[in-house]
Image (tube, rainbow, N blue to C red; front, top):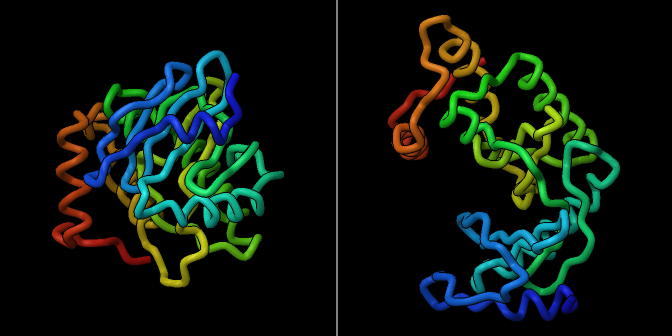
Length: 202
């Protein structure tokens, strides 16, 4: 197999952040706001390759993951370079996917996520930009949290608190639908970002 650096170099991204091509040993599994994510075939490793304008986040996110390495709630990092990170591949469903397919998110899951984020806070981090797509419930029913690049920002982020309140006040209600189509979730997320949905206060 090629070196990780060589594999990352096969990923071609144009000036509009569109994925042009990549090596056959990579499987494209996701696209975020700042990077493409691939599974390295025949392994349990994933490679995150950042858009050119966001390449600086590779160093930032790697340093944060290193601070969390002994916590099982966060993936292990195996190598990083100027524009990529190689980490654990996670088998499971994000909370977004759980809602899309109707997989039940239990109160135990929510407490475990809360615990995982509080452990990050004890490491001097400020868990931020927490949303349904960066929290996994694995096939072994464990919690994994990814996309920690903003965990060192100083401003207060209310997203996780709002998710918890929405879970308690809406999702836990007997009549609330446990299956919410992805397009509906995207509309709600966009309205939330625009401030059109009131945030919950403690």
